[in-house]
Length: 216
Ligand SMILES: [Zn+2]
Image (cartoon, rainbow, N blue to C red; front, side, top):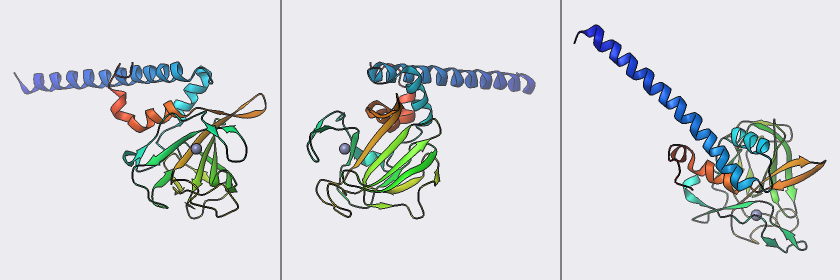
């Protein structure tokens, strides 16, 4: 085989690899969307699932391998009167206050920052497509973060804590965790949706992308 032939073969092989990668990526993205839709269609339209799966780029805690969460959306809560749990609690395997880095899952801007009786120190980020991402019970905020600040997916916005359920500064009424919620405008009202399946995807990311079928 001459060098010329060898070069040709290498080029053809590279083209096949590139094509396969693009094709597999497309398939995976369609598969991901249909998996998400199958599990989320009770409270979400397909178009919303698509927007969410595209704009949510990273897990909301940097130390994601040290975190656990389950599908606790809709559970009963009693503080401040009977109500439903409007998000997912992400809990560290080892309890450490003011340590784990909470980051924005999507690009957007800080719409709300400050104390809430239920949410403690919280940050609310509005994405370009209009979803509102809610991060509650923080121990501290990232320096310089204020209303109107622009954030990119992955930017650290604060540290995980256990603040809330009282007047400003109250902490320790429950374990250290991040309460993560997603809201969207429906008929002029801000309504929550279940972030569980999206978090599941973000947690596993690339690993999940190429393991077709395992979850069915
Ligand atoms: Zn919660």
